[in-house]
Length: 438
Image (cartoon, rainbow, N blue to C red; front, side, top):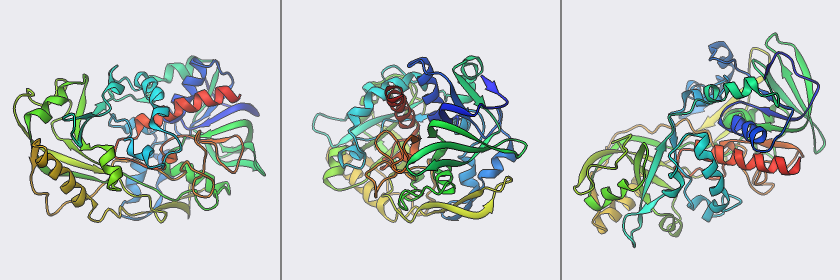
C-alpha cells in the first residue's frame, strides 16, 4: 500500500522502485510470502522535473551531466519509464573469464523467470545465441524487445493493494546507518525536508549505477576505495557500416519467435582465446517476427556497433561539493570511454570471420563517427572478493552485514548485451536468497 508515514522498524527496506527494486519486492511477496517490507522511492507516481534535478551530477569527461540525469529517473518505476525495452542474456565470456563470481548456468533459471516480468516471448532463453554453422565462430544473437514494461504502471496495483508492502513516495534516503559491521537502518528526508531514522534488519539499495555508490559514499562506506570505481557503459557507434548478409546467415534469424533486433557476434570461445572483449553488430532492420528477409536470399542492411569496455578504475563516482535541495552531496562523475581502436580491431575480426566462412561481407567503416552510450550505468559497486569488489555473489556489501545492493552496479564485467534482463534475473536470485536467510 502507499503510505504517508513509515513505522520505526522494518525487517526489510528496499530503496528504489525500478526494475531491480520492484522485481525483488514483488518476488518476495508473491513467491515467498514475505511481509512488512518498506519500499522508499524519492520520486512521485509521475515524473517531477524538480525532484529529478537532484540527480543532475557534476560530470567530467565524455558524457555530460544531462546524459546521466536522463538515465537516472526518480519516479515510481524508476528508469524503466525511459527504457527502450532491449533484452539480451549476458554473454558467457564474462563468466568464463572469472569476472563474475558464478557461472552463467547459475543465472539461467532466473533469466527464465525474468521472461514473465519483462513480458518477453516464452522461448527467449532457448535462443540465447546460435552458431551460423556447426563449426562457425560467428553467433546469431537475438536481442528481444520488451513492450517495454513500465514498472510503475505494471506494478502500481500490486503496490497499492498489497498489505505486505508499504511504499513511501517523495522520500529520499540520505544515508545508510551502520555500527561497525552491522546495519542499523537508514536516515530519510521527507518531502517537507524533515529528517528521521528508520531501523531495519536488512536493507537493499536498488538506486542505479550512479546513486548506489553515491549513497554508500555519503554514508562513509567506501569498500576499501572500490565503491564508485569502474564505471562502465556500452560504447555505441550508430550506423557504423553496412553488411551484405548471406542467405545462410539470414536464415538462422528465423528460428526464434517474438519481436527482436537481430545481432551477430563472435562466439565466446573465440573472444576468450583472443583475450578480447565482447563486440556485437545490431542490424538496423528492427522489430522482426519472422527473421531477416525470406531466409533464402542475401540481405543488405546498415548496422550499429555495441562494444564492451575494459573496466577502468579511473572512471568513477565520487562526492561533489554541489548539493541537492536538501543539502546532500551530489555525485561527481568522471567518465571517458577509453575505447581507442578496439572497435576497428573487433570489426576487422568479425568481418574476416564473415568472409572466411562465406556468410557475408562488411563495408568499410565510417571515418567519422561519435561514440555514445546506451544509458547503462554499470560496475560501480561490483561483485568480487573483498579488496577488488564491494559485494559478494548475492550483492551483500562486504563491510556491512545485512546491507545489499541490486542492479547493474554489481556487474563486474559488462559484456555487450543490454543490462535490464540481467538486472531482473539478479533481483529474482536475491529474492530467493533473502527468503532463505530471513
